[in-house]
Structures are given as structure tokens and as C-alpha cells.
Image 1 (cartoon, rainbow over the protein chains, first blue to last red):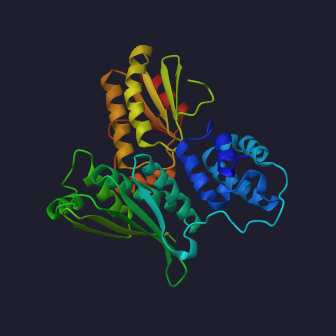
Image 2: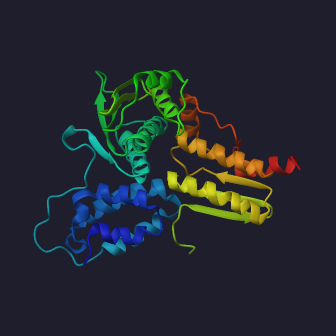
Image 3: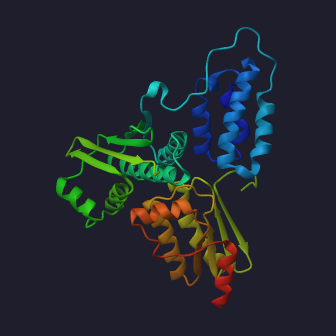
Amino acid sequence: VSTVAQAVGGVLAHAISPITLRSITSRLGALGDQRARQLTDDDRARVLRHLDICLSLFAPARCAALLEECRRALAGSPLRGPAPAMGIAEAAPNGGPRRIEVRREDDIAYARIEALGEAARAGFSRFDSVKVATAVSELARNIIFYAGTGEIRLAVTRDGKGSPSIQIQAMDGGPGIPPERLQQALAGSYRSERGLGKGLLAVSRLADAFEVSSATGKGTTVRCEIKRAT
Amino acid sequence: MGADRFDGLAIVGIRDLLLVTVSSDFHDQLAVRLKASLSDRVRTSGSRAVVLDISAVEVIDSYITRVLNDIGSCVRFMGAGCFVVGMRPAVAMTLVEMGIHLEGIRTALSLDEAVTALEAAR
């Protein structure tokens, strides 16, 4: 008997891209590690509801057919014993920031999808969500190109009126950006081979608040905030 | 390439047109692979125009824009036309806010519009 992640992955691997699949299975969280046959009907419904949301976003044309296949893959003998108290991993459990490791080029697209979902859950419109995802994409790419590895944290905060904003923090332990180069980049007068200047400048234009701290040899941290437009 | 195997790119030749449909997550490797394979396809197929359908793409950042610009310039250098069609409004607005331009490539609302423009140019 396979786990939920394997069963679902087996069905979806041929239909959607590996990165989208990774995003979906990672969101299944603890439930994904459960053996498919041990799920309660409730668990199964939760997995399918979650898949429905993801598939309607990333494979709308084939959503219904794929969902039906997943349903079949998950249908096993009914559960014996008490239901495990596990849910689909929601973003930012106990209100902490969502951490996305950035190690490979794939992670850029993964971070993008995660940011899109995070912003949508926080109540951002489609347009504002795309803004957040684009900023995250730029920052993740800078990490890969210039530092090799790093991390992106996404946190949702709310102002007095309850209107959400997303705090993006991109950290790496790379070579750092020399102060004069950073200044040029943000003034639009510096362009590196791979376009770091463009990327940082672009993020600063998208963000409502933007801050870079960088120390040569110690790494770079970019913090920015994008508010939901009201 | 099996029909059911996902590789994120579909390149279809119709008459003297190469239609490229890009999947929802247009990631870096896909973009670079497209850049490499497309010019070959233009040459071998003798197509007069390339149309990139990006209507499924949710997020486009400065790097992907640069790859699109490169593809457009390259195809034009080879003597064919190049169009990007179906960009989502949120993507377009975000690129404008970021101050990024599509310099090397023409755009159209839809595939239909692109074909009409190409025929008019003949």
C-alpha cells in the first residue's frame, strides 16, 4: 500500500509539472505520509478538496478527470482503528513565517507558487498575489545566481483595520553586495551580466517598504512589504 | 516525446507558423530550453513566424522577460516574426510597475490577433 503522496503523485506526475506536484504534495503535509489505506473518509475528502483547489489552478482543463483518478488511487479499504489527528499542513502554523529554502534553480519556481498561494490565503486579490509572487521570484533568483543558497520567509501581518500585508525576507550567506554597487542598482544605473540590478530595482518598485542590508563576505538580507491594495 | 509526458512545452507547426504553448510554471530551465530549441525549429521548419502563447503563465519576472526578449530578437534576426500572445492582465500590470519592457518582441491579445497581424504584414 502506498502513501497518499505516492498515490497522488503517481496519478499527477504525467499531467502537471514536477514543481507544481511538489507544491501540492508538500501542502498535503503529514497527511501525505499516511498510508492511503489508513485514511478516514474525512481525510480522503480533505485531500481531494485540497487537490481540487490546486488542480483547478494549475490544470483547469483536466481537473475533473484527474481528481477522479486521484479518488480511485486513494480509495482503499476503510480505516481500522482511531483516526490519526493530522491535517493538511496549513501555511504558517502558529502564526510563524513560512520558510522556503532556496537551493536549486527549481526552487525559484517553487517559491513563486508558494508565494502565490500564501498571498491568496491572506486575502490578496489575484493582481496583488502576482505582485508578491513576482517579487519573491526576483529575490529567489538573486539568491541562486549570486549566493548559491539561501532562504525566503513569508509572513502575513495585519494593520489596525485588519488589512493584510505580506512581509518578504530573503536571506543568504553569499558574497554580499558592495555599497556603491547596491546604490547604483537601486538608482537603475548598474546592470550586471545576469541582471541583478534590474531584479532588485524591480522588487523595490513593487514593494510598499523595501530594505537591503548587506555585508561583504557575510551575505545579504532583503526585507520588503507588499500591502493589499484596498 | 510521448503525448502524455509532461515537459511543459508544446511546439506545433501550422502552415508557416510555429505555435508555442507554455505551461503554467514557466521556470528557468524551460525558458532556456525553449530559447535553444526554438531557433533550430524555425530553421528546420522554415516557419515565417513564431507565436508564444503565455496565457497559462501566472508569474513573469525580469529574467523570464529577458529570455522572451532574447527569443524575439533571435527569431527576428533569422528573418521570422515573433509574437507573444495572451499575457494575463496581472502579469502585464506587474511588469509595468516594475519598469520592465518587452523590447524585442511584439504582443497581441490572442492567437487570432497575432495571425491577423502577420497576414496583414505579408
